[in-house]
Image (cartoon, rainbow, N blue to C red; front, side):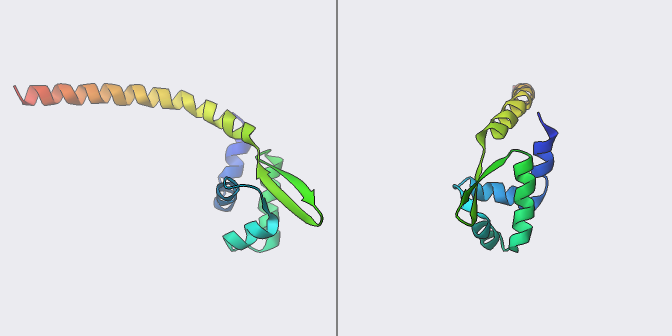
Length: 107
């Protein structure tokens, strides 16, 4: 797991940008308007996301259109999967324990 991804997503505005881009590609101006940011702020955040390879950009005349790249999110999902299985095992054991307690309280 690349920590650059987590560092880029740690900033709330960048996380909101990623959430917006889940709906589809957007221009810098559209992102700025939807998040109530100034365009230079939105551009700064998009630059960080681009450097972390979370988004890609294409030029459309004088506009820059950003879209999410699926690969870093798939990598993050794979990394998180190892935690999911650990927690599921722990919750299963907790559930078994609670069921045992219930049975011992209700003879």
